[in-house]
Length: 219
Length: 182
Image (cartoon, rainbow over all chains, first blue to last red; front, side, top):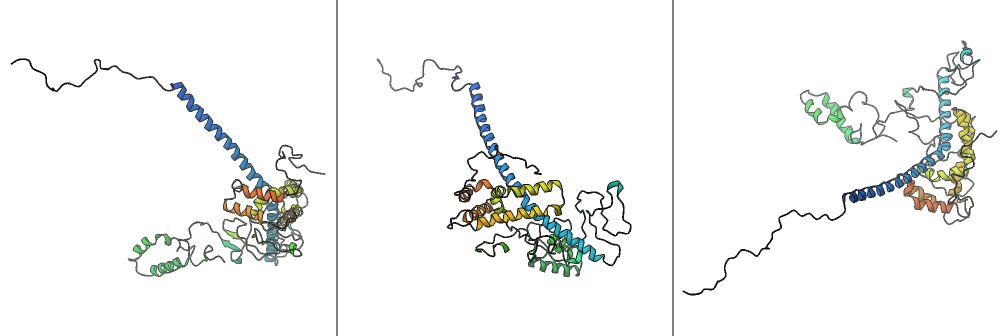
């Protein structure tokens, strides 16, 4: 046995002489103050645009308001004529209804009376229409009598939504009749039917029975 | 309508707002009065003592597009009516001024429709119609129909000196609040 040569051996990997184990955080990029400044600058710019747009929207609302203000005299004149016509016709109806009564005159809220306020004189004989208010100022009537069967009164249409479950479109006409027949039948089947058609039951109450449906039957 | 009987009757039917007022009691106006118990329909004609005036008969979109021009065109009559209204709430006291306002608006409407404003017979009331049809589509937002509004205003103010665009009319208004003229 003499000298020997080293063959390939399993060596540890090559590593630097010094291994960095200390903490190292390079302070780079913008500082905190700069970040805050950037945020506030962006927000400021954004709010500036918001303010500009709000001013623009305000002007658009002003334009809309002035459009409507400009039209007020026209529409008010139309409504005035209509109100005068309707009140005149109501007064005429009142006179015609009460024509048999000798000393009745249709109430005219503005009819001048002898003296006003505390010096007002009440006309017992009712030669002229006696106003309700003893004042020169115009007072609009609060109440209006319209006979229910006169045909001038349309029932109120509160429901302006889906007409699918309203009173009597053709489909529900049929089902309402079925419910009416059903109510006359045996009791033990009613509960199942009522649970299925719970929506229609309230329509079949006395309020709506037999009355015309103004929504679906408008001419 | 009676006013256009003697003229070229190429008036388009724009629909009616309150057509049962006055002598024309054919159509039904259901939304006038809000009563709790129901709607009050009254077809009685106007008393004969009150002079008859034909109604304007415009729906909301044509009225809105015409509003500024109406304010400019009918300024004295509108102011008169509003001053009268300020004095009293009685509708019967201001009927005369109201009739004048309605006649002025009717005049303006006929002017626009029959193109009496400028003498170009080519486009009659197309510009106006386009504007209010656009308004109908766009929820009556004036800011969404600026192109048509510009075309309408260009047509309305063509060859005319009373064009207020580009001039400072708001802050230089002579009489911002109308005063009673004795």
